[in-house]
Image (cartoon, rainbow, N blue to C red):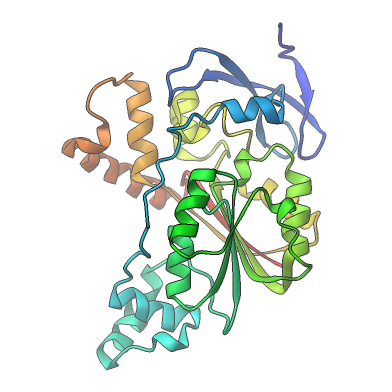
Length: 319
């Protein structure tokens, strides 16, 4: 089928969008090509034509995610626990005198992605995978709940005693105003219809609750997207259906009654090292297992942070 690469309508704001780039599934080395367009108004980047739900299912082979059995909560250092206490109201983690002092000194240097603590608070993780994040948050005192589409992920979560619904967010049928915090980490870019998804998030979030979204940064100024183009690992063609910027993510949230609370950018070694493998067409030892390349990635991380051009958006919204 011949694709019209002139103009199409944006799935977020319905404005005119123009052809941006074409690529293939570099992760699994498939050769079918997919076209992505960029909106002239909200600057979203999206696949076109939008695949059907049945086609989307074929994008995820059995080995797309390896779900570690019985994942343990991440061990949190005493310093980080002290910073949680000092910066994020985890009063039950009150440290000893020395760590109280360190928390006050070090807290400006820690941009921790954990939400402010709410006593007896309920937290929902949408797309919880193997449940490690849920296990960590439970260890920090939260009443947790997960939603996961993958049967493999569900089995691991249930084996760990984590309460997880198998299916999408809408099928979970949570009551209105159910959760103090909802986390959506590297999920929204996989969703075909962003507006109905955001409607459900807003409906199930309590008044004054916090919605935390983590997603690749598609803004043209993002360092990886700017310099790596179609080889940028975070494109994840064709699984990433819509890529967001901080601004259009905020616009989407505001249309559903949510207000911006705070946001920041970050980047990770995984993104730059896997992108490098795509650029050099590496079929051998992965770059993340080669010491000098890992060292080189630290320079990229520093540059992305220094210029505030990180590859990943962290946005927090409140209701």
